[in-house]
Length: 163
Length: 125
Image (cartoon, rainbow over all chains, first blue to last red):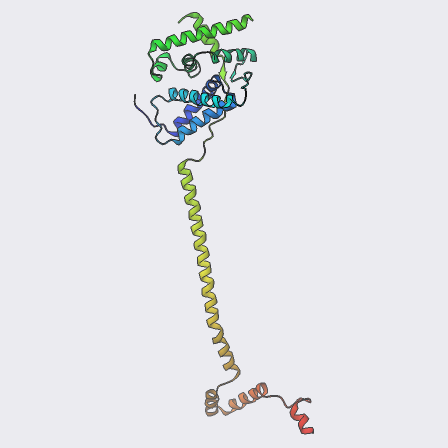
């Protein structure tokens, strides 16, 4: 896979397409929405500022960087305050906030690789084949991660509904 | 794909990540360089203008200092005709010489016509 230098317009386009999803992903790593937005903004501004920036797979790079930055920030902040777990970082036109929060909690409890796969597939619109390529993971592994993730989410959401 | 998975996928897609603010792109390196260049150019122009103005003012004041004595000389010559001019006038035009001398005596010599003039007072004594 070749490295390609991204233009400003390409970076902006990536931000428009994946920015909100990355912020939600950062929230699933434990940040509040404002901090998640900051992390994503910083990440894209860094991409714009770096003259030699040329990731092989920009979307995968963005997810990895968002996760690392979020975990670092969360580690620093954990000492200071408890994070709110009632803040919605998803919206649903017909569902109540309880459903939104239930989904968020279910996502937070997924293992990192499964969570990343779900975000890439559901909200970044990538196919399993593309995810396998950008994460440099065998297709079967990606498919398994996705299947397990859906199963866990279904279980979690089903349990909540029963309650 | 498992129908349950498909249904779960469809359900998850109904949720959308919360919108975030647009990317706040600050000035790029290129823009910063252009702005700095413009500011430097403005400062150079300003400094150049000030120097030119100061130089012009100095030149003017020098010129004025040179002109003033010459003017004073001309004025003095106009008020007191030189001996050379009077001699020339005596040779060429006697009448004019008389009128010039009369005028000069009126303007330069003290008056003896007034009631309080020193000559009249002495004469009366």
